[in-house]
Every structure is written in structure tokens, then in C-alpha cells.
View (cartoon, one colour):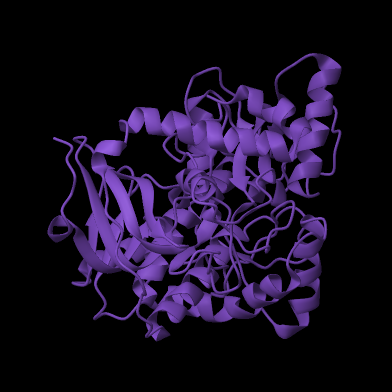
Length: 445
């Protein structure tokens, strides 16, 4: 039964992390082992978008590639990126990859035993490490396995953040509701938001349906600075289906290995390795021209055996739908994929509210600009999660002021709260960019 929670009943911890994807897990692992950490996640631990990342993770292979990598990232982002954040991400990448390998992450190698670097859209060099076509799953599972063994890290599943506990622009913790409808307050010195993007608000999305931008709604509610909330990436190639539910992503790395896009007449109509927004717009134009809701993708540069080895997950999914991606024309269509905007942060993941941090897709530090470069998402999540952890472990400050009371009776049920959150977010997107809203957001769930 919902009640006014007494202070002695508050759950206390040193750090609470909301979200169990790559960003949240890596932040937890980069904090000291003697620091008490509570990780809450909205559904099961494996149901995070990090698991779905197919393509890979970028890395600076040599100092000679820095300028090219920097320019590729900036150009893809239409030069609206934060140059300092881009520089930090690229320079940090070798150390991050080295750490992942030490933690047990396995990346694919070529016949000579060296890493098999691939290339995706808008990259001029092969600089992307991958694990088959399930790189996100490989990284997330490795991090999760280690985190579960840490005595200082506690996981609580199927628990939803419904509010922030704050006073005078200082965050004291969160209010949450568990799977049984029980509400509670978690008090912590530091709060890290790692709740992902907003795909669950859209009819067609590559995201899990429960990823609904809760951190963005609460930021609007509590006047925490947001940035570029209309910068939402539509991925050009998801497997076309009339079935309800999450759209299956056909990774850009397939095009990096030679896949081409064809229109209804079987004609190639675009350079497939341009930035995602350019390819998406080209697909939309072809669909308008022919009055269809999809185009086609095929991979003529590989045999079935080669594709099954390089892209086992994608190959199998397409085969289940009746398509051999190396021989058939596979119907594909654009779908909502990634949030470049979000909770505004500096390069140390600090938000405009004291003791509140944001990492991963939830955060907007300016790395991606208006359009994310392929395979920068996992790297960005890891780099800035570590920077958040470094700041937190070196912070010896104490919070000033009295801990606010938490009146749990004031909250409606979780379903009603989610409706309120959705309206807050969609209204903000519409305010920022009416054209984008009209084009893509009238399809939201």
C-alpha cells in the first residue's frame, strides 16, 4: 500500500545507477570496489538496447588516423558536434578498448591473427572492431558477468524510476516503483542516469518498447537542461514487417561489406556508405516515388556461407523471414533508432543539477552533433561513463541542506506517469522541430 515514507525507511546507498546497459555497467565497474552501488533497471538485465548493437565499436588505431576520424565524426554530425567532446572520445578509445579486452571482451580477428577492422557509412577508414554482428551483446554480457561478481554492486530488476528527489537544484535520489506497484525512495550521494533513448514512444523503432525517455521527461519536470531533443536518428535499414513490435536492425556494417539498396524496379539509387540521414532521406524519396513502404537490400559480395559466418544473427533472421540476403532482395524500411540529443552534460557527464550525471544515449555531450557516425555509440557510452565514475570517486564534498520529504501518495500509478512522460517529451520535440515531428512522430505509439 502506498504511504508517506518515513526517512528511516528510505533505501540508502552511495551511488544509484538507473539503467543496466553498457554505460550504466561500465560506470559501476569503474567506481571503487568499496563503494556501495545500486543499479536499477526497468525490465530484465538483458533487455537493454546495448544488447542490440550489431555493428561494432570504433577505435583510434594510430595517431595518423586521428584527423580523419575526427573529421568523419564532425561531418556526419553536420559540424554541430562539440569538438572537445569528440577529441576526448577519440583520444580515450585505445585505453577503453584495452580495458574491454582485459575484462574478457572478444573481438573478431582476421586470418593473420590481427583484429579484423571493418568500415561503415561515412567512415573513410576501417577502424571498427566487432564481434560477429552482436558486438553490443558481447560487451554487455562481459561487463554484466563481472559486475554480478562484485559484492559492492546490487541489481534490482523490473523497477522503474518515476521521479527525482531534488531540492534547490541538488539531487538527493530517486523515487521508483517495482513490478508489484510498490513505491520507494532511494537516497544516494550520486545519481547516474543511463536509461537509454526514446524508441518505445515510436511505432517503428529498433529499441525495446520500455525504453521511453524517462530521464528526459523528469529533466523537463525539474528544469534540468536538455539539448537537441529533436536530433533523433532514423536508421535507414530495418527488416520490413507488418508485425507489431520492435524492428529488427540490419546493421550498416552489412553495407560496409558491400550490400546495396535497390528500388521497386531493381535499380540502385544511392551511395550506401553516406551518413545515415542521407541514406534514410534517399530511401524515403524512393518510397514516395513508387508508392511503397519499403525498398530492398541485397549482399552480392558474399556467399551464403560467408554471410552466415560474418553476420550470423542477421543472416538467420532474414532466413526466418524467407530471404537469403546474398541472393534475394530483402525488404527494408527506415525506423527510429538513436537519440543524439538528451540530458545536457559536460565532458565529465555532469548535468545542470548537482550530483546528477547522465551517460550513454541518455546524455548529450555534443559528440554526435545532428547525426551519429556509425559505431560511435558504444565508444561514447564507455568513455563518458568512465569519466563520470572518475569524477564521482574523487568527489569528497558533502551535500548541504535538509533531505526533502517524499510523499508517495502524491504519485499516480506507473501507467498514468508514463502517459505524462510521453506527452512532455513529444511536446518538447514538436516545439523544437515541428517538421520532424510531423514526418516521424505522428507514428509514435
